[in-house]
Length: 126
Image 1 (cartoon, one colour):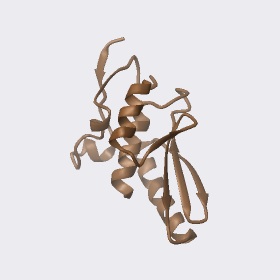
Image 2 (cartoon, one colour):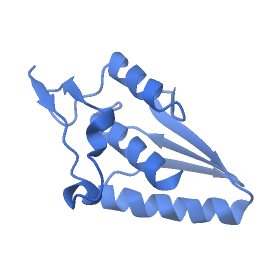
Image 3 (cartoon, one colour):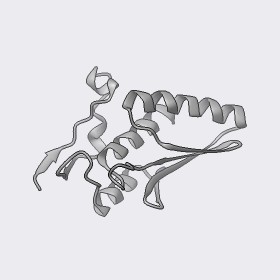
């Protein structure tokens, strides 16, 4: 494998509206965009973004809202960000609590794409 810089191509980064989302995924040994991240890389990601956790092989974050209507409004904002990035989290809604889970099903694990999406969700929704 060779060392490769992970570059973000989300709409905001391409237009120069924010610094690259890849700041949390600096340089990893990757053979393709579907290469899963190492345990070390995932640990570093979680250390840098403690609002995210590892559960059942997925990056997971919970949000709690005043009521169901606020939770649904949040999920609609998630949908907009996910569509822009063309990467969609698993979403679980339980009244006022929303769980987002990121994993690249086609790679059978967490990839740099999941890490970029976690950062984008945190920045755009917190």
